[in-house]
Image 1 (cartoon, one colour):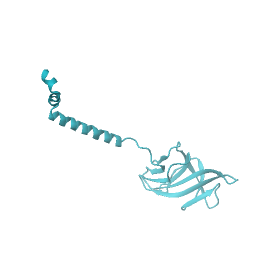
Image 2 (cartoon, helix red, strand yellow; image 1 turned 135 degrees about the vertical axis):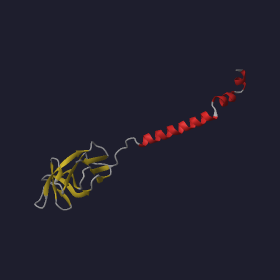
Image 3 (cartoon, one colour; image 1 turned 45 degrees about the vertical axis):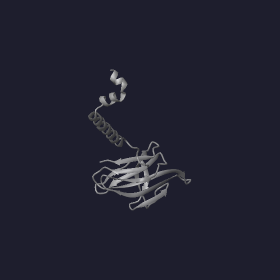
Image 4 (cartoon, one colour; image 1 turned 90 degrees about the vertical axis):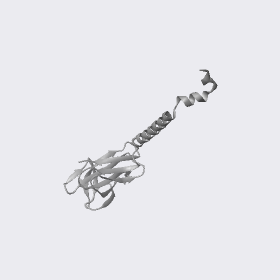
Length: 163
């Protein structure tokens, strides 16, 4: 016991061998890599914007709309726009940047099958590409029932059109 008191470094060298140090270094590196991999799989916040994804097996056409909350004296102005062609298993941003409204309106259709992803909010659309800013539909427009999506005041949202 007197030997160790006179030479404290001898205790250090004798207690942890070179092989033990290599194993400890290997374990530390393995733990670091495991922690890095786990953090990369952690849930990340959704990117800013409103993203629509087509999870069906066919191409769909998507229309979007916003109730601006502004009135022209005869009714509230709704801005609608379409059509965004979305292939199967693809996504696109309908609105980019941080979301400014609580509720967004979307509608989709698969022309080949006649399938619609509809809701309960009537909005004006056109058979051709369109942007409509109005409170009612004129004779040149059609009315479709859009789904209202509450984004819960988040900056990013993904809406899935499922089969």
